[in-house]
Image (cartoon, rainbow, N blue to C red; front, side, top):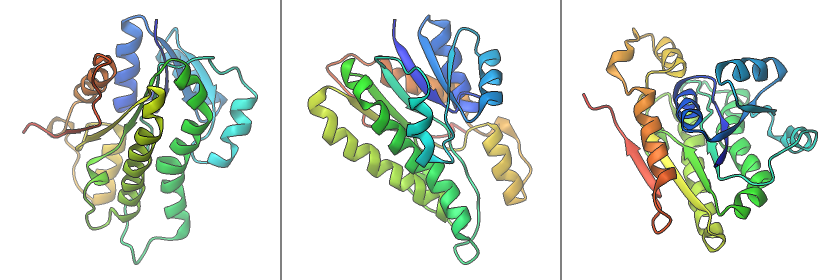
Length: 229
């Protein structure tokens, strides 16, 4: 039975992945930002375990995990959580930059560092759910795109460094996906939100499971997913 640690399991792509893995009998450890959110995640995904650690404060992740029982081995670490705040470069404050860089880049790097020993034991898999913004940057997406471009660099470097340890590393680049984050983006853009126009989170979950389940003789490095209409 495989054990997976997931960030962002509360909604959207993360929730879809968690449901699918639980349905097939895998063990889940879900990262929550605080104790209240941990209770919500446990209720949303019965049978899963939770750990508390705030991705918005990566400097504290090492201390937080040190106070809790972390699995001795992990078959995968799935970085799915993310934060987005739109704004023009001329208007963005350091606070806005730091909030997105911390959650989208520094925290995944730190969480990976802390859990690499458990991933190496199982010759496991690290999956970074990136974004189309990790490949192309558009007006008002500067801070978010910078964090996601950095996430691509993190994944690429990790892949080279851990190849000899049998660790697989995959980046997934979804286009706009129907989720609470997408609803927030539309609100910031001043546009009406129609989830039917965008990718179903279940479709992105299917691509993530494809990468996880690929036979050991191969590895999906980068996977781009776009709306089909």
